[in-house]
Image 1 (tube, rainbow, N blue to C red):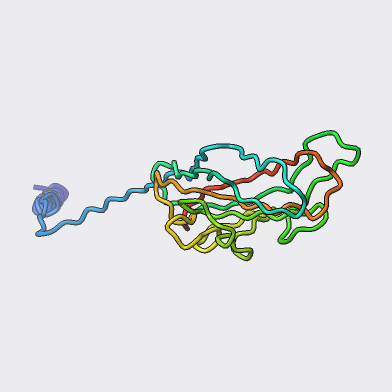
Image 2: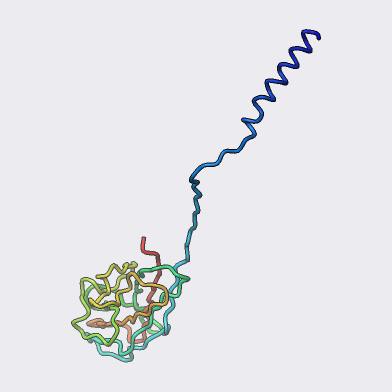
Length: 194
């Protein structure tokens, strides 16, 4: 046998001796498996009606809506909170001097105040807190205090299918230049709790 053949034979024999150790599977007494899942439904809100008419009112008057607006979390399972904002009261008709009414924390000439609360039944005037319930042109997020009356309905931590009742209190301007009907746009936005 030549030296080359002997060296090859030794190399093959060495590989064959080590191969069973490499190919043999080992078992353990425990094994770990990791599963992950994400549940991410989109926020969604449904409102029962899309308008309410306070009717004809005098200057410097206060009125509370006599029916509530149903606000329902109709997401696919997201616990939500809402933000609410209101617009200036926009002139709806032809007038010699069309004038919008500005939304403000107090009333004045061509200036009105609008408040909102969540409550199961008709609220009284004292249920509307000027500091926590006055609407603005910017969204205000419900936090368990804003737009809340201390009951379970507060636009916060709302689970899928939960129905809450939103009420409004309007204080008309002390004086107006434009006597046409005015329209106020309310925007309710649903969002997750984080």
